[in-house]
Amino acid sequence: MHIGVEIFPTDQTIGAVELAREVEAHGYESLWFPEHSHIPTSRVTPWGGREGAPPLPEFYWRTFDPFVALGACAAVTTTLKLATGICLVAQRDPIHTAKEVASVDALSGGRFLFGIGYGWNKEEMGQHGTAYTERRAILRENILAMKQLWTNDVASFDGEHVSIEPSWSWPKPAQSPHPPIILGGDAGPRTAADIAEFCDGWMPIGGRHAVDKFTEVVAACERIGRDPETIELGVFGAPPDEAKLAELAGRGVRRAVFGLPQGPRDEVLAALEAMAPLIEAMRSA
Image (tube, rainbow, N blue to C red; front, side):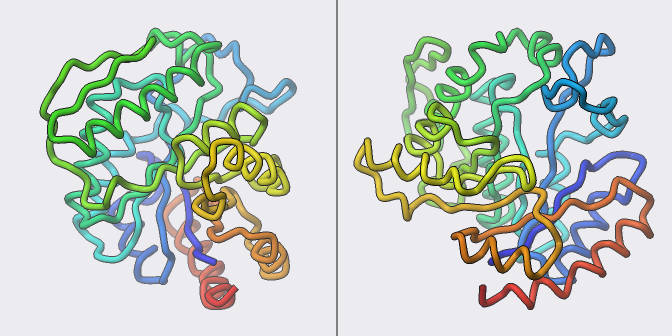
């Protein structure tokens, strides 16, 4: 089992570059940065879209752009995998995003993981012109269009939401055919169908989404003739507990990502140090 960590990189916690150095030095496999472009102050949508959720923490609107931050991290590391956890693809331009993904992957020597999600904040999406009810369909077409840009010298795409005339776009990703695409969220029938169609992994949130729902992904793969073994299962926000991790490994989980505290430098580094023994403990799981 691979072990990674995630944090919102902001101006109020440890610097992203220093953190990347420390994460790699401690032997973690990957570093994951979430994304929010901004948070409208109207705050109609509850945190995570869940009724009764606590107030949204301030770090949501203080986070750095993930591609800029990960690019800086790439410059000071050599083995660490650099990941979006998650990129809000439905509210992004696919042409610019394809170039950002390819740029980080190429500059890092093929160390990028493209974690994606549909998103939950209706106000944020609305400011980007994204209709909440169409976010799944838009994400799907954005990803399919990006794949064309990554894998073809002359790329084009013609969909309901995305249209790209025959175009040149470089750089191409270092990884072939492109960086792994890992979808977060609960695996209902529609999400499972998307995972089967255009993703390389599924990463539910620990404690909220059951990994047992991977059976939905397996069924969706079988419906389109895809080998479900080509889909990697991970857990985001995994419990930093050896017994629980061993149980997850036994259920097919291949990557666990721990959350770091959104605190000052010393608190973050202490958490990184405290969880590091689990890397070796789970290496053969």
